[in-house]
Length: 169
Image 1 (spheres, rainbow, N blue to C red):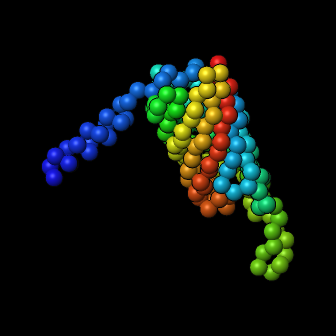
Image 2: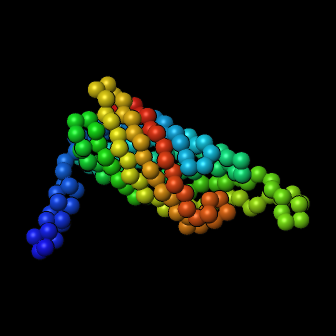
Image 3: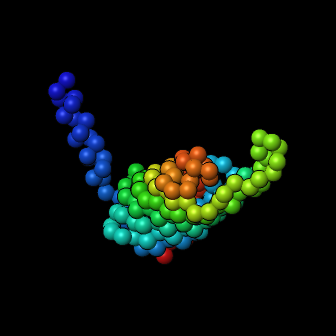
């Protein structure tokens, strides 16, 4: 049992230290998806170190209850799986603005909830494939938790799932 307890941390840290293929200096493209409604983001990735990068996304969200735009920044660590497949994880946050559609209150009277600025923290985990041409395709999961003004927008928590397509240069 003691050997088992010693092997687990060694495997964990060994997996974290596995090197990735070099990531491109820049990547620009789209990130499409969301957990509720449709969202699209213009996505830019900038290499910070050999296996780290910064991703900045500017996008909008559209649903029956609201329209919103947001700016997100995530610092990512990139690791190789096999060949041209990588996985990555990161942490960051962002801010945005939301406008709500009119609703009916308890008295069946129309009203519009307060919109405005919101600030959130975000995590990120995903998988990507780097083609032989300068094209990168990814699928990621970005949970977001509201810090300020997010409660009315999305109950303080959002599961953001998206497909990314980026040109590398």
